[in-house]
Amino acid sequence: MKIILVVDMQLDFMEFSGAKLPVPDTREIILNANEYLYALKPIETQSIVFTQDWHTSEWVEHAENGDQFPQHCIENTPGAEILLNRNMIHPAIPQYFLRKNTFDMWAGKPQPMYNQIDMSYVGRDTFFCPNPWSFTVEVFGIASDFCVDAAIKGLLQRGYTVNVIEHLCRGIAKDIRTVVKEKYDGKVNLI
Image (cartoon, rainbow, N blue to C red; front, side, top):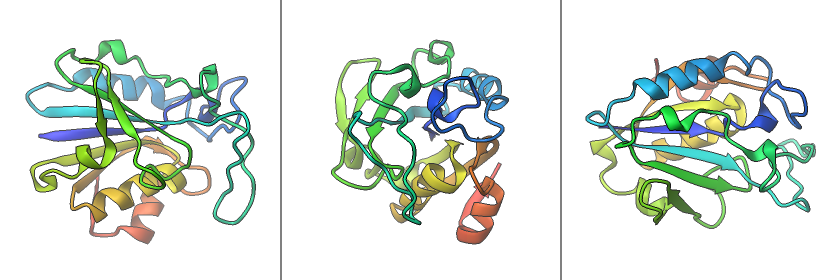
């Protein structure tokens, strides 16, 4: 069984008019990501987790080097919306949503994840802790050198086997192949 982790595939990170923090070459991955999600089978897929950058209008976020990011993914705005067609996903595959106010989905107070199918909530750490050896996590999204990197690091720390779907990732300054080679060589599978 596998868990799919879709990282921050939101309007404000895509190369579209009005995006607040567009990542290069993101426009082309939306169709491919939709096709990947559509092809998932319930017998092989335990669930899909969509992370969502989610900020108040007063929030100020800084990069590791101290630079301030422009305001982006403001709660309940079009820029915060996930751009994938989730209606095409097989209805028997649970879809969870994890909203976060920093690029690292593991940082800060654990946030509850919302299950779209049964309208329930589960804690992030509860969801990702039981039996990590039973699941492989396939990861893709934006940005390879920030949010995807942090997601991979946290999954490895929790004992998961991690496969990164290379053609469905984009980075700001580094592509996912470079991130994996520099930080996770031999620990993560690029597929």
